[in-house]
Image 1: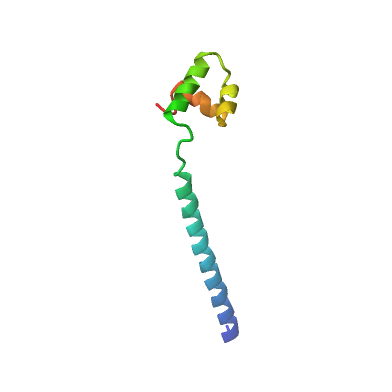
Image 2: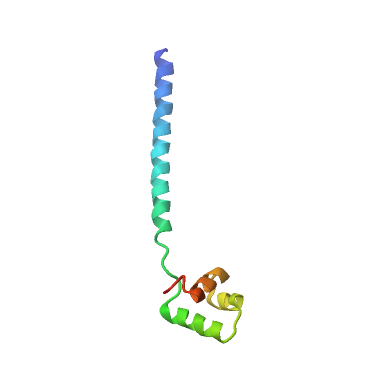
Length: 83
């Protein structure tokens, strides 16, 4: 391998290592963000969701009023969230 070709290979390797390090850091940042998902609803709102459900409101109506997903409301009502 000639000196110029070897230098080019080393430069490409260095660029790949730099990109790998960047992607690893980005992945770690995304993982950290994933676990910082704090509850959107407070205790009072959760209590109100239970009240609304007992009063006969549909899950979608409750979800719309609190700007959350219908599944979230269902899980709150069933006791899976906010125990």
